[in-house]
Amino acid sequence: MKHFSKLAGQMAQALIATLALAILSGCAATGTKLTEQQIAQLEIGKTTYDQAIAILGEPTDVDLDSDGNRILVYEHTKAKAKGVNFIPVVGLFAGGTNTERDITKLYFGKDGVLKDMISRLGIKGDIKTGVTAQ
View (tube, rainbow, N blue to C red):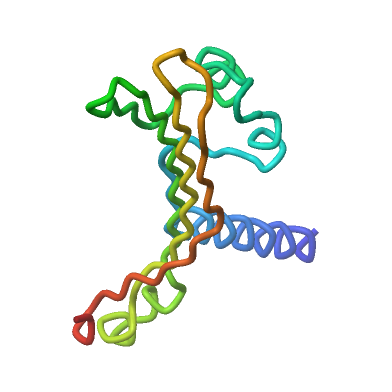
């Protein structure tokens, strides 16, 4: 019985440590995440504004240029804190966040038909924090 309670205590400690790591992982995301399969469904000269929104969901932003053309902007950013942030003292000097951004812009003419699109997926970034950040 004594062995069982010791094992249960160790399992509880492992569970608490796992939950703490999950909470402290420092992960965040914002915007609308698109997949390559969604983007592949769009056809220049055929896809309408309403069809694009039905396929991709609500955009992050909608712009209107001086000629009356609409631009749908889909942006997604994922940020994850570096593990070194959680090491006492070291995090003050070498901390930061790794980021990954996706940007897709769809250009629609006055007729509401897709004229052009630009998509850049997986743009990597590194935000430095702490004493050495400049």
